[in-house]
Image 1 (cartoon, rainbow, N blue to C red):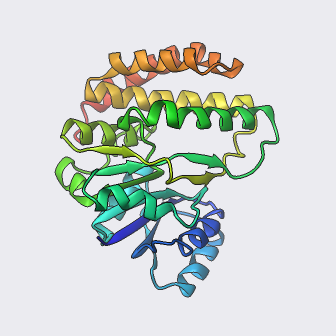
Image 2 (image 1 turned 45 degrees about the vertical axis):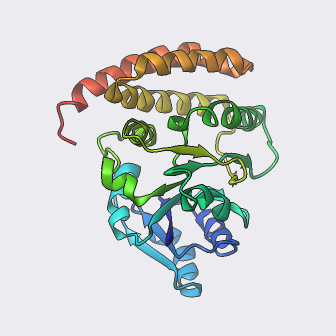
Image 3 (image 1 turned 30 degrees about the horizontal axis):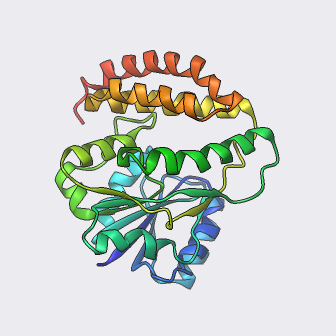
Length: 277
């Protein structure tokens, strides 16, 4: 199968390390498509340098939200399989080979893998983020393919042909959960691949305030996606169980954040559902 790795970008110079890691894969991608959401010219310099060194690298201007950028980029890609990698992630040499193996073998239609911290934590907040991810992937994603983050995943193109692209109304996030839910509802099979891990730089989450802000944004996006797909009740129960099972003082922030985000998400969905996707 021909494989495209799609990297979305907006003003993130870390993408240079991402592209370097893709050129070192044991299973080389056939195409590396960088979808730029509207970066400043100085942030495009490392991309232009990378493209000059490797004719597999293509840079396309795809302005908009993450969902809009991906929707514009998907028709530009040429792969039978589309792998997604974020600009703050670095893939070890065996990543792509492990990630696409179940798809090429016919055992799955989409796959996802975990993340590992790129560097040692410098604050208690960074340590919390790292510890949560180390718990979340084997205990949640491995058991529920609808929880697969898009940033480290691979998909047969036929899935998007069947269910449609990302819902660009979901500007607050949740567009990845929405795609997962629609894919599973349509009968497509997801698989968790623990060997397909990537290093993830989350050093920007260096304070409790930043973590709280991200929790709120993600919770609003997830609420909208769950309401759209009619699974809010089941997913809300799962979120409560997660807070109870992963014990950390920061997790109790969910007691404050999630009820507020639930209301905000419900109000947003009431407005969004009147807008044609």
